[in-house]
Amino acid sequence: MCAKSTPNYLAGYPIALVEQVQRLIEQGLLTDTLLQKYPHAHAVRSDKALYDYVLEIKGRYLRNAGQLSKVAFDGKLHVIQHALGTHTSISRVQGTKLRAKREIRIAELFKEMPLEFLRMIVVHELAHIKEHEHSKAFYQLCRHMEPDYHQLEFDLRAYLIYLEATGQPLWSAANIDAVSLLNE
Ligand SMILES: [Zn+2]
Image 1: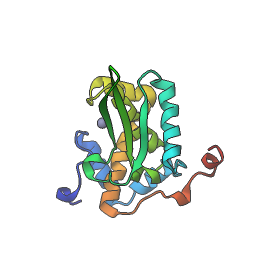
Image 2 (image 1 turned 60 degrees about the vertical axis):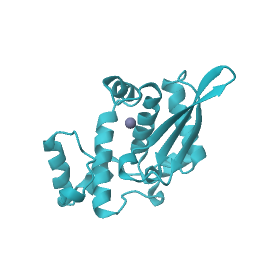
Image 3 (image 1 turned 90 degrees about the vertical axis):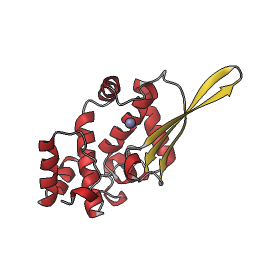
Image 4 (image 1 turned 180 degrees about the horizontal axis):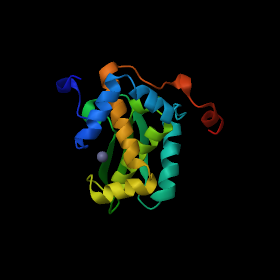
């Protein structure tokens, strides 16, 4: 592996885990592992569908956390530091009240991924409504919304390393799970 050109998607993880991922990529086994765990791409194909998906999770766990003014896939968000998405909160004076206008943008990269990864990033961005920093409380909230959060984030980061190295996505609209299409 060429360490200098590989973005540090696994920074902060134990070295043994990072080496394990690198070995899997070198041996060509990461793809099988990921595809076995996550066989299908999700069917959330539009900003409208994404908005509904985010609102459903927010309604369940963060009902009172303020309104979201916009939820969208963002094609410009594929640069490394924003690969995981962004959330913005713009304060506006409305009458005498200061209202926060919140937006969630998800990197377009997440359109071609399994539902588990989309859910992970949505949970991450929703948790930022309440917790700005990546604090202990932040990750607690993530785990509250998605108990598998940490495993999913790890698998996603492993996938991003693979994608950066090969440029070959593992999922596409062509392998959307037929069942999830029916349920839309
Ligand atoms: Zn974050």
